[in-house]
Length: 278
Image 1 (tube, helix red, strand yellow):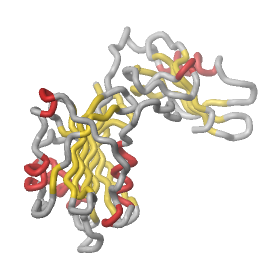
Image 2 (cartoon, one colour):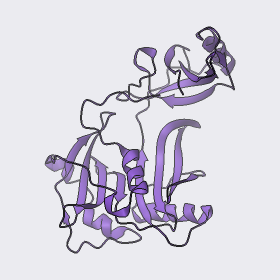
Image 3 (cartoon, one colour):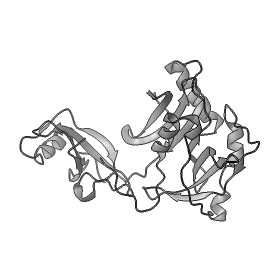
Image 4 (cartoon, one colour):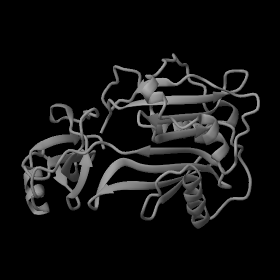
C-alpha cells in the first residue's frame, strides 16, 4: 500500500539506510537540516554519540569530529525521535543516530564504510550482524533472518511477528559491507491495536473478499493473517499514524491481470484497505 503524505518533516528510516548502503562512502549522508534543541529530560536519556562511535566493532575515531545538537524529529507515524550527528570539520555526518525520547536506539547510519574486502558467507553475515547488535547493547532478534544484497552492501533482516503473525515492515535490519563492516541498523516496532475478538476462519474471509471483487477479478492463494495499517476510507492509502490492525490479507488479480490485495478485519471481516496495484 502507498504511504500517506507527510505534513510534518518525516524521517524516512529504511530509505536513509538504503542511501547509506548504495551511495558511495563519501556521499551516503548529507541531508539538509534545521536543528531543534530537544527537551532537557529527553536529551538526558540519550546514549552519548561519542560512546556509540567507540562501541562499534570497527570503532569510529572521534578525533577532529564534533557532536551536533540533537534534532527533535517526527516520523510519519507520529512518533517523536531525537537525532544526533557526529560531523567532521566540513559538516559532513560520519555517524547518525535516532533514539526514542526514552533513549532507546532505533536507527544508526554510518557513512565512512568502504567497499571491498573478503565476502562473507550468509552464516558468517548473520553471526556478524548479531555481534554488531551485541556491541551496541541492542536486543537480539529471534528466528532466522532474511539476507539480501543491495548494490555492494548486505542486508540482514529479522521480520517482526506478534503471536506468530507477521508485522510487515517491522523488525530489525542490519546493513553491512560484504565483508561484515557495519553500515547501519534500523529497528521498527509499530503500535498494534488490541484484537477485538477471535479471528474468523480463512474460508469466511475468502468468501467475504469474493463478495467485494469487481467484475472479472479473482482471488489467488489462501488468506493470510497480518498486522497492517488501515486504509484511508477503506482505500489504498494507509493511515500510518494509527495502530496497526489484525487483518486477513487476500491476494488476487483484476480482469486485466493487475494484482490486488484486500485487507479485512480479522474478526469482523469489514473492509479495512485494498490495493489494486500491489
